[in-house]
Image (tube, rainbow, N blue to C red; front, side, top):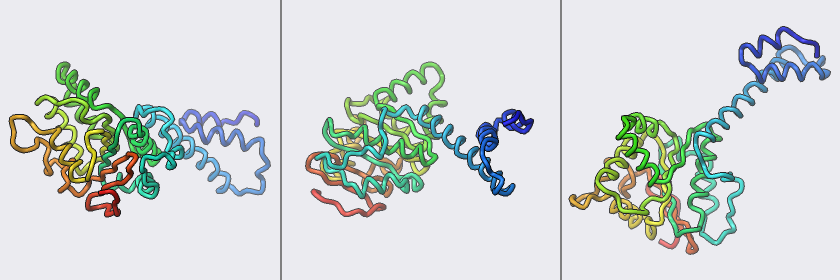
Length: 264
């Protein structure tokens, strides 16, 4: 097409998708389309490209494991993954309802991959996500406390729609780390969703949640530092979903999802 001043103006306004669409229309026979239809094509192109750029930015910030796309989920693997249940999670209702997901099972069954696949799907649906291993998260908070960024880090974590905390329970926490983790989870309770993966939380649903509470228990206290009032992950809390991934299969769901279970 000939150089058109509108093309330059669209680029100046940073409407790059519309500018490219206008350039492409110059080489096509679109005389049969009316003004509103051609304008609609320009707007659709701009919206599509903006959505693509925003998704790419969310995925970069999420720092997910590579190649964790929900479409590549292997439901044939002998690990007891419930396909209808996982697809319900991929639909994203748990995110809009501010629910949390616990993925449990032995080493090598793909807990991290599944968690990142859920977070990747959340990014596609317009939510922000962030993947971090618990040891590294605690290290970052300790460094933040030393250099004055502690409050800022807590605010950043509180704003993430889907926070993935991997490798929960690999080591015993000291009092400082327990309180750091409590701050993170308490800020997110009822406001954002959290995905936790762990080998610690195995067995029946109630035992799994009790194991997490025991992990957060202070040696000097008679009650868990993390309780139902902080919203994660007491069995009395209504927003916790527990999925056990392993050769025996099975999943456990708290009150809200009300999905039948097996091997309980």
